Image (cartoon, rainbow, N blue to C red; front, side, top):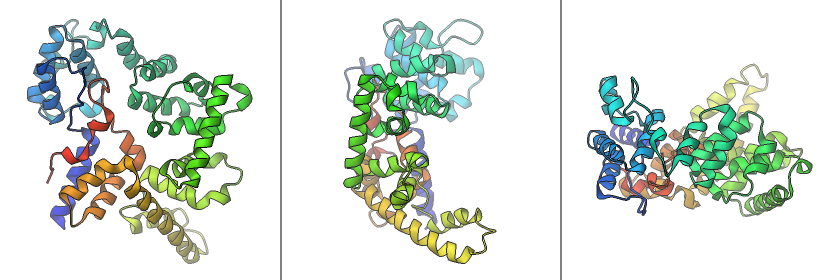
Amino acid sequence: MKNFITFLLGLAVSLCLHGVVLAQSDSVDTPLLKKAIDAWLDYDDKTALPLLSKLAKSGNENAMLLLGQINIRPTDISPYLKSLDIKTRNSLIRAPGGLSGKSWFSQVKKNKELADAFVDAGFSPTLRKAIGQLLKYQEYGQAITRLQTAFNQGRFQTLFADYSHYDIPLKYQFELFLMAGVSDRGKLDREARKYRKSLLRLLNKSIDESTIHGHIFLWLISPYLKNREKYEQQIKTGSVLMTGNFIYDFENSIELLLWSYKKNPNKQKLKQKLRREWKHASEAALKLILDAKEFEPIINFCNKHCPDSNLECVKFTFSRNSGYNGYIDIQSPLEKLISQRDFFKAEDLKQSS
């Protein structure tokens, strides 16, 4: 059992850090760039970064963009990079110039608009424009992360109108679903109203078909529901799906939940009620996970490498990656080079045991 848990911990860490598959794309424009990306995805930064640096310094704009993203993403600072002195590290991931080098984003010409978007997305005054640019270039993972930040700042009315006309894949639409539910129809333009209506129709269909999207949306929008009691069980299932709580370690999750009710005089009765409700939600969520195409990478990996304990593997990995929210947050640094789908294709993950 100990070796099994060690293996699963390694798997969870692997899923959170990198994927290991290179998207088959025309954007991978040279054999050396393909070799560099393959090595980077295989955790071989000692091979990958010098190659990427060499390509960037010779004028390869895709290498510049990728190095620019690696430079600003904290999860991409590998043990190899940490082992280097600052001067050597900067010479690998930054463009020449200045005391510590410049961002490669400043050197990109053809893709300057995209490079600017990556930079602007880090600053509140330019965030709104940057999200639009990232969506325009179909960098959905990066755009939606920033959209969550903007939504949390209370800017959903204008944001929904701004981004409603982009063809965003369903798995990234949860923030737009939420904005559709809480936006004042009277403050939206015609296109935004039309899109809002289509999203809410999709929501109703999702609830009817008992999909993960309907449940998660109900959980997201639950603070704004006037008839919350009607959907209480679906909301709980949505919470399990989105956060991953209760999927793997049910008993511990229940105890943590009950901690907030420690002074309740009917604690025992309440514990039974909560246990029953969340057990049902957890079982419903697990069924949806096993049936949903979104989670095929995890399921395929567990079937391949843990055939005798595949269900425990799925539950552990889903839970330790913070549910669907954490799963879709495993983002390719640059989807034009490495697709989000292939970025964490589980069947090709390296074994971590």
